[in-house]
Amino acid sequence: MKKQPIGFSFEHLLDILTVNCIKRQVRHEAVNATPTTSLRFD
Image 1 (tube, rainbow, N blue to C red):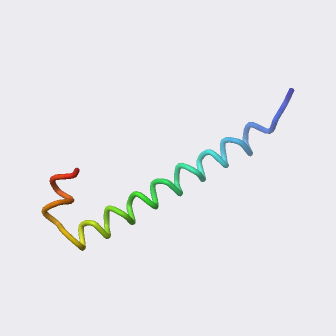
Image 2 (image 1 turned 60 degrees about the horizontal axis):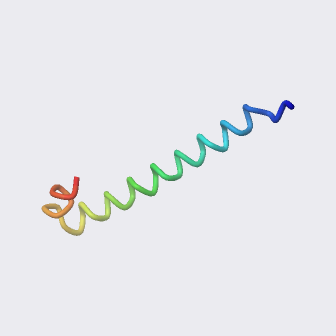
């Protein structure tokens, strides 16, 4: 019943990092495009 929890957690961590990177990039683009709207959105 051992399913390599380390590998699973690594994939999960990688997925979280990818999502955070995408969010950061989107927020960065939004800030560069319209600062006032992004501040209100946050």
